[in-house]
Length: 307
Image (cartoon, rainbow, N blue to C red):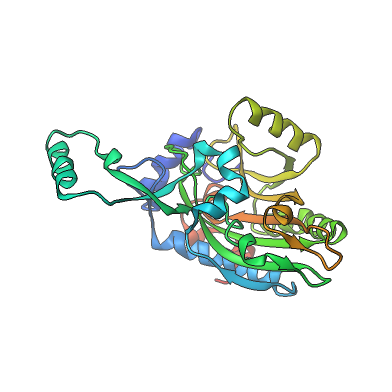
């Protein structure tokens, strides 16, 4: 039983406990809030723990901003599969007359969003998406192996603290032959849950599917499950009756290799896979497991967090 389970039967109680402890500061927008200094301390400790696991990996480090080319996002296929989760960047490009209309609508408490238009940017919905357009061309025989910190946004407004709209991700991406990517995937299906379990979390690995949109999306989800392309690392967080994904291991086959013409020396498209750790969700899982008083957390957990 988690440290908070007796008092947090559902996500509303969990949220209230976080707010009462000063961990979470809600905002007027659902799924967006502020985190305390202690929360950020735990998040930095999580990075420390992951650094220890990644120390022997021969990766290249990369960093990308929380926005990306809208055209590249379309090439990734996101708009076809997840239009309901996408956020784009819109700006005002109108005239003084349009501005006056906006001000008049503000006075009447009316919507003014139609006065803004799309730019060439979109909010990054999956941490690895900005990487693939940079890799067009022929890879080395060893392929590509990247590690990076990134930001992501998904339009999922909710009062559940684990379903924030803006979040941070620690991710690894491997591109190469089918055999190279299969070895990467097999390794991290063991290594990723192991590092989270070392922090005192009851992590399970479950076959899963992405939340594809519409009737066609249901067929894609079924295929993804049948082919076992996605695994989620789940833990009990905001609701003891429901497990939450706090990380994932995903195999893309040759989707990104073909979409961005990333090829092996023999001309074949690269296979790719990624492993992602959802930082906010993992930190929240640690709070659910160990309580809001950091000084009372188990000694071995604190040591792995570098405290």
